[in-house]
Length: 525
Image (cartoon, helix red, strand yellow):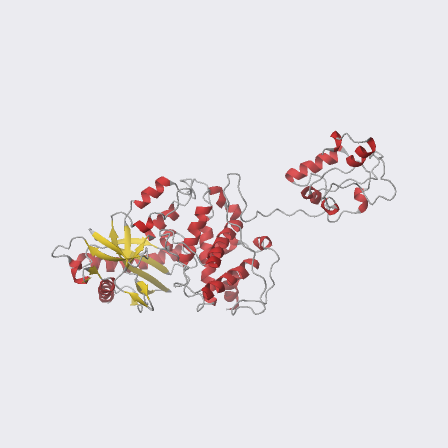
């Protein structure tokens, strides 16, 4: 109740007027005037035996008195000047009034992760409280470093812009690497196109982090797809997986160069990949302007990996992809949830693009089903990152900036650095997991104002929070195929997920010291 409008006795009115209501926020910044001021009018003192001024029911004395306020600064019965009341009210809106030194140096308020905006959009889901200390820490978890009391405090400890500056690729390095890669890839592509082979119709499709402009550290890894259009494909889903399919031809006319790869009318992914790899291996012997070697085939990998030795080693993954211009499979109907982010129209345009099948085999027990192909939407991911803002000019030369890609780079770097230290425990985690979680975070925070560059710390923390939630729940939904869980136990066991969870929590609570470890090693060397 406002003291000035009270209808109580005059003595009570004066007692209430002597204790103006001041919020805890304004109490921190403004110091009340002393009752010993000559201009201060005398007021009735409380009766003998009273322990202090009257308090509102349920209020606390400390909520009015500042942290360093002396008893004389708020003497009982003193009526503050009107100017003091106005200054306190002004401070409540915009901070300490000019000319009034605050009792405690003001600190800029930190935005809370998960705060709700006016429009009802939650910037990120509230994080569950961190687990309590265990008697026996998990192996590999650093325990010697101190734990920061609150996550909000850690947000101001580290400087993300300084980390991003170190990750920035120099134009000279990019140009040198791209020139070498283009020369080698172009040579192999021309060999496939100009000679009569099963892969005569291949075309180049550039994908991966380098072409998405989210490559970090060094331009030493490139992904390229050699797409081969195959009309009249018939897909049969493998074991309700949603992602893996047997590929057949609706009609198989005589003279089809791919007929040699059929196994009981099924286009064998393993046979086709083997022949593709053999042609590339033979052609590499004819490349004289670069030192190129073929890396050992990784079990279950769809890529033909090349190592180009120039000044430094550059690795190129060449992936064969079957292009289908028919409708996307039914398993993708509920995927690509960008309606509230990029818009329904953009989603319709993207779904009208072709989809691809790569020779990535499905797991079958302890082995693989080598005849299966897996859906690939890497070209759509590239388009999403290109059109990443609600505003069409987001991050363009004349457009407003956002920090979406910066957050993705930091997430990729965080996983990369942790994998360097814990390769065995984190071998099953890849940058694709980080990218998928990032896309979901963008879906939950669709507005451009949710990703202002000045709030980079908070935005990155939201991305980390979402990723930790996925690890905790063991649920990371494929962005294009919602029925596929990338964190299911048949893909990554629970122990490894808990290990990564604790590693990331430790990094966040201590200001991400892992981001500075490369610099420390360079200084030692």
